[in-house]
Length: 73
Ligand code: SF4
Image (cartoon, rainbow, N blue to C red; front, side, top):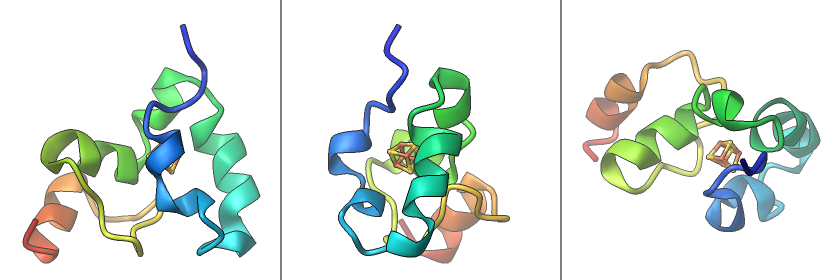
């Protein structure tokens, strides 16, 4: 089983836009196996609507449903 998130190549968290927290999030979510990516709010929102706003972080306190509603996705 792959240990890297399936959205890794297209996730903007790795484009340098969120440099300060990038390494921590990669270790805690993106490279940490399926159970960890599935706990990522960016992952959860993309699974439901196919995209996620740039400013949503993996550990957002909002649920995926709240994010979708707030951003009208
Ligand atoms: S931030 Fe979340 S959605 Fe993006 S690559 Fe990492 S685990 Fe996947």
